[in-house]
Length: 481
Image (cartoon, rainbow, N blue to C red; front, side, top):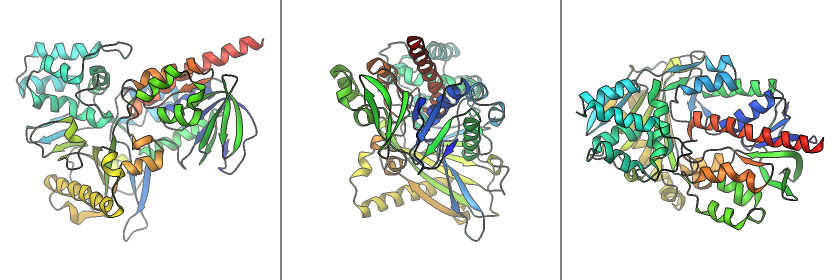
């Protein structure tokens, strides 16, 4: 049942899921399929979390630009996850991107983002012995997020490619954009994500994010999941050390278990409250670092205009050297263009959209005056247009709509602390996975530990936590027999 946002929910549930990102949605769908009573609550007016979209009018036309918010592309594993935990129709719409390009002062490369082609480029273009390349890939393949390795990304690259900043750029830059990794982060945060992507290329959902999320909503309802949007959870109820439900707009909804798909630190400190956790747990949660945020510039072409195929994902930069801290600077010369051709949404009249993405620091935007904020937005818009002109001369004249999103936009729509686009750093995973050991019936499934970021990581983490919740509910049932 899909509830009106104004409707008071009087029934109780096995589990309430707070937040309808891909982790929360996938968990809710699996548990609904398994026969559990599930309520999915979302504070926004759309499901999907960062897997979302928005529409804007086209000038001189009845049509609308449709912009996908998330970065273009996810690993092939999304097909298996969607087929197993959603349905075949959703999985069958996932198609491989044709071309990923790098354009920067150090090199230019076009790739299909597979292990075979990366090997070829490293050997033939960068002059690395094939045995070294295979050793690097073999080490990535053995990485496991349960390992407690202290090796950093910087140490990993120096081990196999000493002094080769260009190779570090080639291998790390896409992952910096995918999950906010830097050279100081644990190597595992890079290895698992990159191994996922490079195995068989990069994929996208044909039809657009809007079609995918609406298909998922239909599947949730078919499996008996109740959904209420514009329902911001004010408090998770804790009674006698156990989860008892949530409070929404002053109204209590009871449940045996609660899963937060919200930001980890918000979950601990605000929705639950430090007083319900041990001092040691609160101290660890305090030390968890939030990941970085991001900026996007959305550009839509006029009706009837077109561009040639220039690639699906284009990592561009004017910076002579690659530095992950420089990528976060407001004056960075690096950005990624996601190009959406008419084939992305074949059910609509032909339209082209291009989205520039760049990582960003919340603090560089938060304290700006209104005038400074608008000036900085204008700067990143001009940077995007200028960068695109180098690839597509004359593109400005074809663009009908352009606007920018900043870390403050992220904060406003997602309620993520400091506008964090990628959840927390690696240490957040331990807090997330062990929260149910502090309070019975309380679980977390969200963007944590970097490797659980992105569409595939989020969905799979939802599945992992769904098993934990089901085991908890089964124990409760045995205790009442």
